[in-house]
Each structure stands twice: as structure tokens, then as C-alpha cells.
Image (cartoon, rainbow, N blue to C red; front, side, top):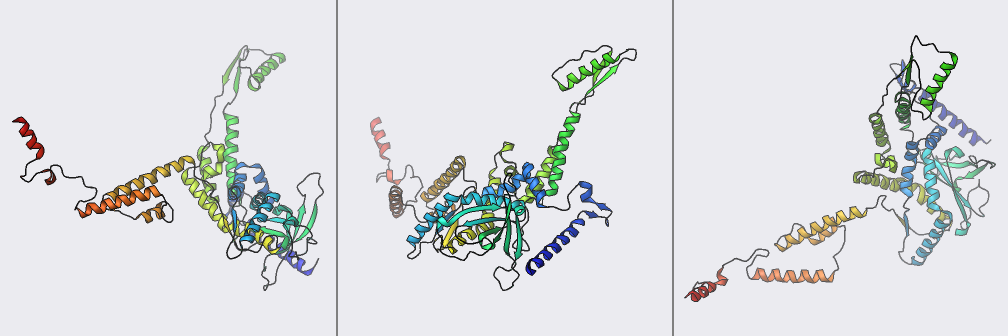
Length: 486
């Protein structure tokens, strides 16, 4: 063991000791006279194995880990290379190579799996397999690889990955970051011999969600709500046990004191009672025995359950209807969808893109697998609008446009056409519809002509006005009627 590795081991031991001391103080109240964690059955020391067990066996725990990753990567982003200057040919090559890699080794599927694994513990890695790059424990030195040299992407969790060495040189750009890992392959696979591979950081994409005081170890997604899972188990499991015990309390067989039963009669009576309880027999044959039901009760756990779920939802930032999923038989409301869209959009911008996707693409550019170009990443909306939502928006837009047209016909407008299109329709430029433009041009000419004649646009013409009278002030229609009468 080298001196650097020994110092690293000593540092890790010191950190674990400090964590253990802090964990022992959790739940202490009244100068240590009450330990609330012990009273409520909460775990003071949380390990990866405990998080893994929760994730694998509890529905809500699995949903908390999987939902953010699934929503982030279910609709993969679009990578758009720059086409500035003479880079059109390189941009086409970039896109062609990237799409071939994505399809061949299922890039986004592997990233989503790694995202889920990293959420169980404090970090996860994506191991990059590169042909002809030398030993795994050495840095990738060559810079002339092709897409065919990229063999695989393998996600690993904290359980199968250990950080052997950190960079401790303050002048190094990777100061405080891992330099060497030990990856255990096949550790959780039966009938497969597991072996350890020391791996250099240049072959690894390291990512951790919920980083705080360092760039290596994040916050497990189940950590803040771990105690609530114990409370949830008490409510759900306790109500099930209560129902099992109390929904049918059983039968009371009151034997007449004057009734004499031999051993055979007692056995027959016991058999009758067992058949009634455990089988489908709905009758009892008795003699000298009065059968009484002990009654039944039911408990309603919905109140405590809803309170715990509200706390879990608030802590994780996952709306309850999204958290419960389709199993609850309810669709997410528009407010839930908007809130979830905002959260995932923030996660895509601040975590998924800078910590997962860009490091991988930059690594491929550095190895010349992809052309050296600037690129943008565009993310789709998590919850696209449904047909019903689009129809409602279309009705509102048409109603607003109709009101705007009416105001324009009456000689006044609250806002301009350009402002209406830009602010409320999110459209830029002018509409290029020849029929509408011709109608608008004719309408403007008609309004201009009416103003010249002193007529206010939109006002109805006067009935019985001067235009309908002759020079003598008489109505032509009236005179005609008078002459007809004469």
C-alpha cells in the first residue's frame, strides 16, 4: 500500500468515525433522558444496503428514486452541433456519429440506469469501455479513436464502486476529486465470478445528486424521508394487522353447564368451528352449545396515511399524484403537471446536462470520436399538452383574437397586433397569410374613407337622417304615401 493510499484510508476512517458520533446524538431530548429515535424505532446509522433494501422492497421508496430519473430521460434531449462558419460538414458528421453511438450502445438507457443507481446511494458511475486504450488503471492517452472503438457504457452503484484515491494537489484542476476507483464487476450476479478492476478517472463519468459541501458524495434520495417509511409501515402494516384481528373477532361457544361432552364430542365441536373459520362452511352443528359472534370493527388509515404522504411529497418535491402513479387511478392535475415540469426542467438544467450528458460528450470530443464543435442541448417538456388541453387553449386564443378584432373595428386597440402575437401566442414576426392580409388592407382603406366622410367606424348609421330628406325637408317615402292616398 502506497503512502497516498494509506493517508486516504486514514481520512476515510476519520470521516466514518465522526459520522458515527453524530448519529449517536440523533433523537436526544431532555439532556439525554429521552431518545426519540429509539422510542419510534428510527435507524440512527443509514448505510447503502439499507437504502437498497428500501428501494427494492417498498413501492413508495422505489418511486422516489426512479421518478426523477425516468422523467428526466424518458424523452431524451436533442444534441445540436454548431453550424457557424464552415462547420456545416462537421456538424453533419457530429450528428451522424452521435446518433449511431446512441442507437448502438443505448446511451440514454444506460444514463437513466446510472441516474437511478446514483440516487440510491451517494454517487454512481458510468464506466466507458474503450478499445485499444491500454490498462484500465491508466489514463487514456491516445486522442485518435473512432466511434467503433467505443465498446460499451456500464452503470455501477456505490455498492460495487470504491474510491481508492483522491487528488490532493491544490494546483491540480481535479483537486478533491477521485483519481482511482475499484469497480467490482458481477458482484450481484449469481453464477458469475466477481472480480475487481482498478480504473482511472478518465474512463469514468462520476455523478452524484444533491451535492452540498463537496463534488463527490451527494445526498441519497431516500435519506430525508427514511424515518417516514417507518411511520408509513406502522400505518399500512398496522391497519392490515388491525383488520386481520378485529374485522372478525371470532366466535364464542357457550357450552351448557349441564351438557356433558366426551372427548369425541369436544373434537367434533372443534372441527366444526375450524371448518367454519378456515373453510367455506357457513353453518355449525351443535348440541347444548350457544354460538355468539364477538363482533367486528374496521379501522380507517386514510388520515394518517395522507399526512405521511404529504410530508414525503413535500420533502422530495414530487407531487402526490405523480408519486402515487397510475396505481391510484388518478391523473395528475394541471397544477401537479406544471410543478413537476418545473422541477424536472430545473433538474435537467442544473444536474442532468452539466453532470451527466455534457461530460460524456466532451469526453468523446476529447478522444476525437466526435468532431470538435460547440453544441447545444435542448430538452423536451416532461408532460406535453394533451389534445383536450390544446383545444381549450385554442378556444381561448380564438376568443381573445375575436375580441381584439372587435376592438379594432370600433376604432381602438388596447395592444398592437405584434404585441398580441409575441406576448400571448409566443409567435415572432408577422403572420404571412395572404387572404388575411388582403382583408386587413381592405378594412383599413374602408376605415380611412369613413373617417374622411366624418363617420366614426363601428357606429350604426342614423335612421331618418338628413340623407333621406329632400330639399324641402320632406321625406320622399312619406310624400309618396300621401300622393297614393289622394
